[in-house]
Length: 468
Image (cartoon, rainbow, N blue to C red; front, side, top):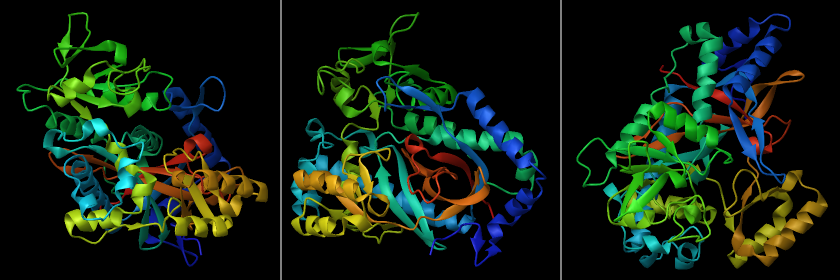
């Protein structure tokens, strides 16, 4: 049975009582008018993302839904504790596999799963970044399946997107409905840029004896998350740069300015590993910085997050996270994993092919809802074609059961209706580990759809954490 986060056995749940009263206060078509006003604000601000389905990138607006998603302080305590636990364990895992690989020696994780993954970066072997932190910013995707059960869908340890949408959702709600915030005691999220800057400052190289110079490195305006790159750079008060704005000299990184070269200490990079340094990775990259890896390895600049961090959110590694938590922290996982079949294992492959119509199959390195099959929603022909792809390259796929994602009331053309949602809390790891008391809630706007990604037609909601 689907869990409705606002309703419990037909009654309004306590955290939503004031929201329900607010919804009931709208008369005639005034709610629809407010909904249209919110969309106009999103458009005016320019909150967009890029999709690449056509030959040239296309800018699209992200649909915004006004009905907030609400968590109690106790509910959030569970989520926050679970996210911190996973972030700590995955960072210990990353440092270990590049420095000693004890978890592999102890046969907790198969060596081939790590070393044959395209996310594993051999050039990082033997390297220990400042404070031994590889993944400084993580976004853990979580779904709720019942009143007291939160389950992790996947870990995003490289360059998770969406925090700008989280903040703009709140800004729009506070602008349009200030009285609603006076009636509810909600944890603030507007300190995230300051927390991000403090974290970035805390991981400056050891030889940095001044206030570190920080930049956000973007692939450019055609990137799907460019809005977020510029948004965060602006709020942190740091420069947004592209590869051509930086250069290296004597294993140090400099930014070109009108006043001459300026040495850079910390780079919050939003460029994928293969394109970061053409001298170390993809030699055809035109968006990276030649020599940046030498500067990094010589301790003259910190890259956030470290190259090679992607192995921690590899979907094949995901199924081992409970073991990773136990191995490094000697703790039981606070947040459960979804049962996962790794098609590289013969037994799992056989099960997946026999039960594919009931499963969700994902590419190990897929993202954005692309390259996946939702068995119960797929046609016989789609299932047949996908099964063939799995047989040809079983190591590229994992499968999971179809979950009953919780629903929240959402605006539709036919009025309010339940729609499936997920949650992405953001965690910062520097001198300390912090989880922002809010999150990005993504909503599947199509009826019965389980795909919440914006690139697949999903929208966003403001996420509230009540103080009491």
